[in-house]
Image 1 (tube, rainbow, N blue to C red):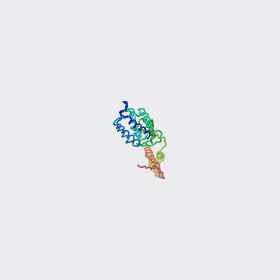
Image 2: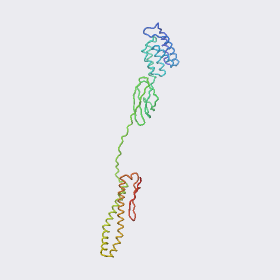
Image 3: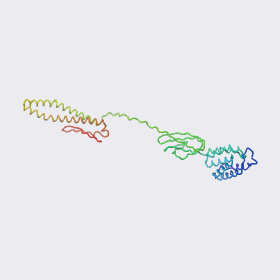
Length: 320
């Protein structure tokens, strides 16, 4: 792995930092610490970073050393445990220092390791969304929002979320540590179209049933008026003359007047009956149309006007 040659330097420094030669400003390294660090570096060089982490932690349990934290952080970084690696790196300047490599050398290497960590490590970001939400992160292609973490590097980022209803939201966020991050994506409710009141009907035309009713009523009124005229202008004078002939005992005149009376009276009765039926039926049609009885069907299916040599009439029907 990169820069593992630095650990050789650290081992040599530990071997040379014996208690007898150590100055008061440097840490005293025990034989047990030295052996654990040396074994940890061998494991790391062989790619066994899990075992290396355990050995470095065992050494730190005996006593803290700056190079041990540096080596521990390096193995953790290789394992992708970036947050733990950064925590180990942060302790390097604050813990007892070995004489060799010098504190300045350790800090220089630390700076390089931190730069690599920030460049290579990624933070797992988990998004919590409603069903059907699509997300775009930093301008990448839109993808469904799922529980699977998105890996991002430290720094500034943004995401845009949309749904099928047309709602959208943008979230800007900053990743400043390697700790797992979780963001809840909330979309505003889609604006609802205002409910418009039903437009008033501008249709002022008469319904067919009302039209038929008006025609029937008009014909009925005409027939009734005709019956009144016949009664007053024809039947009344003939009837008066007929009664006068009977009073005078004029049998000839009485017989002559009976024939027109017998012919006109049935016709006038037919006019009255027909006119009354048509007037009543027409008014009924108009009222039924006003109450919407004929709203779903053609009025022609409900009303029919009939005429014959015996008179005229209106027939209607409805279903429920």
